[in-house]
Image 1 (tube, rainbow, N blue to C red):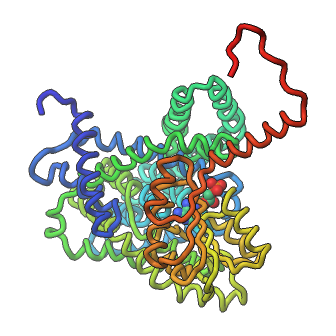
Image 2: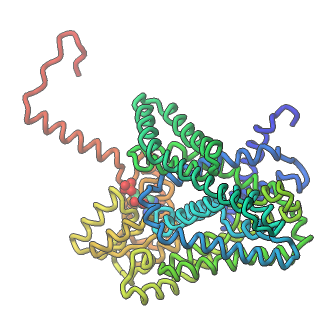
Length: 571
Ligand code: AMP
């Protein structure tokens, strides 16, 4: 392709291949991430055929990381972060230390020096934010207690990585010489203090100044009425803050963007803002996975199979066990501990950054880098399997949690629906579903709610209803709701594609059930009816009817409006 620029080529070929392979992966029932990574391997330099620009891919991936973390921050308030600090702070530090120790031990066994083994260990100890966020999103756990803990955990890991990045160069002379002479130690303390000071200065500045200035600026832009300008303003904030954070404060892009999002999450605009950045964010997140896939040299699998397997065991077996043990010790529920263990059983971008630093310091050779990459790719590929295992262990974890707590805690009992029959199932407990559910409960209908957010789950339970945490489009969740013997299904979620999935599956499982669905467009009404809904209520039409009723009533009770001046059009 002689005329196309490297940027266009990588976007067109990379995204198209990722789409095709992602589609195949979904059809085969595996995570789409596998498809994206394979697309990267195919456009990488180690496989025949087209090779995408290797300098460009990681830069695009950085944009993906920034937008992704900005989106995560938007759903995360300072309050959420403070709420999980008691577990996330000690837990994350202990986990990184222990996983690093395990990886370092492996490096020492290989006969490497302490500095190389340390970098190797650290690379195996820090998980990929992007991978974990995608997994949480896929499992619809982002808005749950577990999701918030995972985010808090990652924020701490991110700070640890930033510290490691600046500390390692200062630490190396000490480790090499084995010396503990005062000037070197002083140097080290100074570097540590400076780094922590910069991180604190950035966070402080954002919380004190950014918290006021950024939402105010966005409100100002929103008032212009231009959606285009608003979208641009959001992008400028996300990218700009991340850039300043890394350029002036030595904070990672990811942490910078996360804090920018978090600052915005407290303003009323945040939800709106999240939606505006969503399409771009998804496209760039795909580029992140492509860029990782590109770095993979499959021959490493044959060259060092032993150490590769051992390193993979550190990431996929030892780290999850460490996470599980730490969380149980800290008094968390087994269910939470299991999900966290699965989520952290992978490594990604932080590990690459650490190994790049190792290479710059002359401590890590290219074959060790390839090895870490291989561990990363394999652990990302295997991550859906970890969640599958968690799914299998969930009933056990719930039994343990229930036995321990004496009662069923909201998250722990999330899947514990009783043997309901002839009941009503309400999908979604938001503005619409909550009113329907409350109305049914008041009339003493046996009721079960399916919701993706855990705060709604406790609200339903408080009113005496049953609730399942999860995505109703998942057939396993519908089966848990005993849909086959239910009498009524109310699909009260706004998204037509997902609602269609729920309706179709429920109709197949229970041909006699009455299905009432919610829609916002005429095309969605047709879609839902075709898939088996008995009644579809179009929100906007009901609003219009209600408005018209009020208007007509008002006109009846008041004197008729003054006749229009002569000469104007009359109906
Ligand atoms: P609202 O638009 O305010 O009625 O809110 C819709 C509610 O439905 C929110 O609380 C969502 O968390 C929930 N929701 C959306 N999609 C699903 C789904 N696929 N399964 C279960 N709950 C959902």
